[in-house]
Image 1 (cartoon, one colour):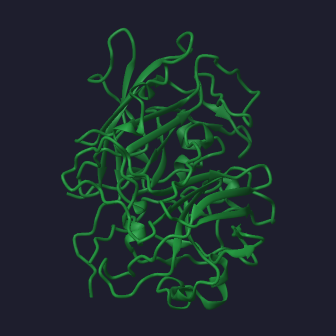
Image 2: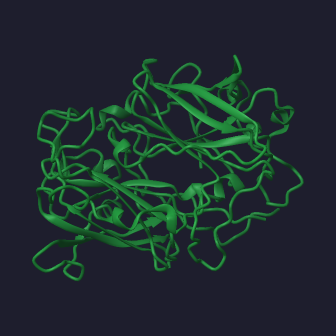
Image 3: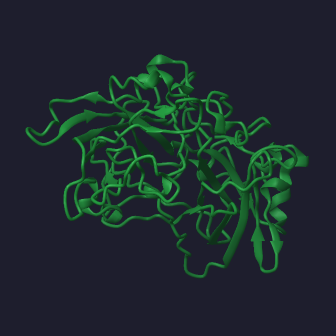
Amino acid sequence: MSLQQSTSQTFGPYFHIGLKPIAVRLPAGAKPVVITGRVLDGDGKPVSDAAIETWQADLAGAYPVQPADGSCPATSTLAGLGRAPTDAEGRFRIDTYLPGRVAAPGGAHSAILQAPHILVAIGMRGLLKHLVTRIYFPGEASNADDPVLKLVPADRRDTLIARAEGGELHWDVVLQGAGETVFFDC
Amino acid sequence: MIEVYRRPMQGTQPEYRFPPYGSTAKRAPTRPLVMLPHTLSETTGPVFGHDSVKASEFDLTAGHADLPLGKRIVVSGRVLDDGGKPVRHTLVEIWQANSAGRYRHPNDGPHSPLDPNFTGCGRAMTDAEGRYRFISIEPGAYPWRNHYNAWRPKHIHFSLWGEAFTQRLVTQMYFPGDPLLPFDPIFNCVTDTKARDRLVSSLDWETTIPESAIGYRFDIVLRGRHATPVDR
């Protein structure tokens, strides 16, 4: 049996009513990281109505597993899930942590590990389907060998790597034009 | 070896740039997307438990001093993957305008009034068969500035997580026979009429509550897992 997948539609400008901010839960022993940035449109103007949704592994590079028997647990495991809206200046802030390294494409038990990263979905008015991108961390030696970063043209990789600035990390989302952020077909 | 998710089927998903929807002009990416292989980051997602929602959150007409204005509706359906498998115990979040077409949001208005008895936000979990159910009121259509005399047809926003990040879907449910549908660029963002029809709910006497609320059925299909493992 094959059913036709439902069509994506825009988050619209009023998603805040239904999609509340979600604070990332820091695992015990995690190194806190603050990531701030702005979302900018094709005119360089701030996007004040975007939702930034983030998903990341735990310190060991592992993710929660759905119950194999299809049951519903009493308590949720949201783990490395976050959601932050942009403000009137297009700014967002993610209070999170440096995740562990996740197995590379091709297998959960692959010997190759990905560099630490955060998977990001971005929804807003004017996007009929959400954008998918990733945030990588500056100064990580493993960035050089990351199998996903290697798929990105070399001159655009820096759009996925946050910049260290005064004890925080800074990562902008540039929707169009010079310095356009790399978005993925996921 | 991990299971990957099927890519979107031909014709089911809109392009980012879609000139009839004016806001896409400055927001749609202009560079080609990079194909992302599915790793554990993409094939996992949060696990939703019974504590995800309060039992009262399925009823958007409750929790205020009085009932909201408007026609009461029951919105229910199933969440399935494209292989027909129910998506069990996943979070469904909805938001909508009130019966006058006004969102309880600082940036909306003043084209029509707020309703003190309506917030417009609901949450529910799917059950073991992928079923969900909300009670609400029929939202109103409302004007917007996309083009001359632009009005959005009545709709309810739906957000789903599924079991994996790749299943994430935000969509909108429309109402059958709405005369504004043929003129709405968001509804018409795909040319496949079957894909569009999937966004339109159907009148459902089975879920209608006599002398109280009229039923609309809305099924949602998320991307399913690929049968073939990718280990090489």
